Image (cartoon, rainbow, N blue to C red; front, side, top):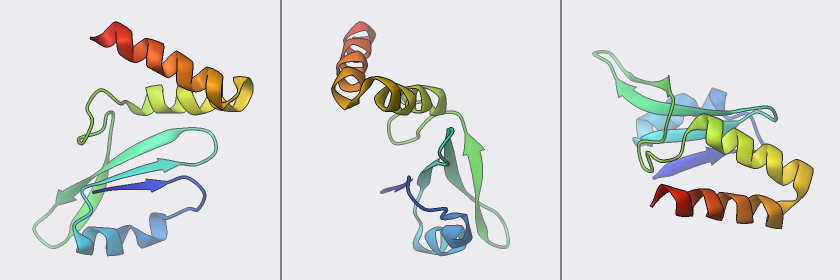
Length: 91
């Protein structure tokens, strides 16, 4: 399961997500995407920043940020087509 945090600041809810065992949180703060991974410690679980998704390693925080920026500036269709083209070059 992945928690995608786009519209609201969910950092205050991270302890609840950790208690539920949510392995990854994708958080967009309006400027950039941050990927958090659940990291169990001796006392309690917490989240640490990562550079790519554990669920979909091809997705990096930079790529996701660029895709959102493109969507905002060029529109959703243009962003989706560019992302599709990028995916095709990866195969």
